[in-house]
Length: 444
Image (cartoon, rainbow, N blue to C red):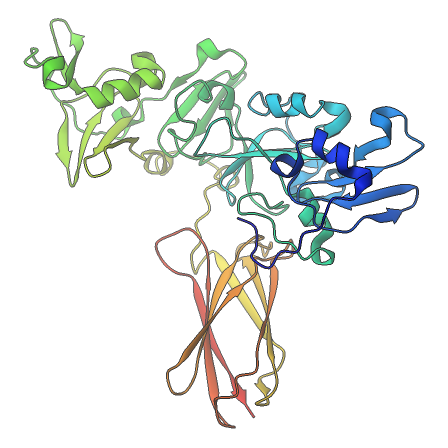
C-alpha cells in the first residue's frame, strides 16, 4: 500500500495514450505530479517513472522514460558491478521487459540481478526503470521500482508502496544460482543468501543460503548440487531398515541400502519432488522424528520440518550454523541483523524545551554502527507520554537515502508549564527484539 496522505493527479492529455500503452496505473503506478516543462521536454511523474515527451525525437513518437536510474548512484551504479561477466536481463523479468518494448524503453541494464537484503526482494536496475519481485509470493508477479517517487522526493507528496522503494544504500548480493533455483516450486524455499558467491576454485562457485549451500558452475546447470551440510553438522543418523509402511499410511519408502531404507512422509516426498528430487536432496539419513512441536527428517543435503498447525513443509535453517564452521572473510558474509549493537539511532530535537503553543520537531537518523552508512526506508513509531500517563502515538516516515526522517509533534496544550514529556521511538524492523530509544523534552 502507498502512504495514506499521498497526493495523486490526473494524467495530462498529452501523456494519456502513452501511459495507457505502457500499462497505466497497474504498471507505472499513479500519476504523482502535474505536467511540467524542462528544457525541450514536457514531463510528468508517475510513482515508478518520469514520463517525458520531446517533439524533436522520432522514436516512439517522441515519448520516453527519462533515465533517472542512471543518476541514482550508490549501489545502483555501474561501478558497483565487480563481476567479470556481462550483464544479462534476469529471465524472470523478461516477460514484462519485452512487453514494455525492451531496451529502447528500459534503457541500458546497469546492475546484475541481485538480492536486496533490507527490502527482501530480487531486483535489477535499468537506466529508465527498475524491476523487482518479492522473494516470497506469486512467482509471476513482477513490479517496477518506484523511480518516480524517489526522484521527485519532497516535491511530490507521495510515499512509494511497501516493497517498491528505491534503496541506494541497502546491502545487496548477486545470486548466480537464481536461474537454477527458479525452476522449483517456491523461489524462497532455500531462504535468503547469507554470503556472497565464493569462487573456491576456477569455475566452481559456492554460496551459503539460510537453508542450504549451493555449489557448482552456474553456467553449467548439470554441475550444480547442494553441499551435504546435515552430514557435516552431525545431525541424527539411523541405520536403514526394512519397509513397514506404504502410501496407504502416507509414507513413501526410500531405498538406501537395498532392500533397506527409510520411510518418508508423503508431504516430504512431494516437497522433494517439487524441489529437484532425490538428486538434490540426497538420501534420507534417518527416520522421521518429533522435534518440539514439529516433525523433522534429515536428508544428505537438507532437513525438512512439518508444522502440523499450519500444515506447512519447510527446510530447516542450517545455513547460519554451517557458516560458523567456515573459515570465511567477514566481507563475504551478507547477513545483517538489526540489533542495538549493529544499528545507531540519532535524534536531534528542534529545542530541548518548547512553549505550550509550540510544535516540537525531531530529526531521526538511522545508521549502521560498523561503518556509519545510512539505513534507508526504515519507518518508526513514536510514543509521547504525558506526566498524567496519557499517551500519543505517531507514525514516523521512512528514512531517506541519508538515513534521515523528520516528524513534527503538534503542540500539546493539556499539560502545564514545566511538564516533562517523555518519548520512545521504535524502528519498524524485522526481528524479535524491538529497537527503541527514549528521551524527553520540557514544556516551558
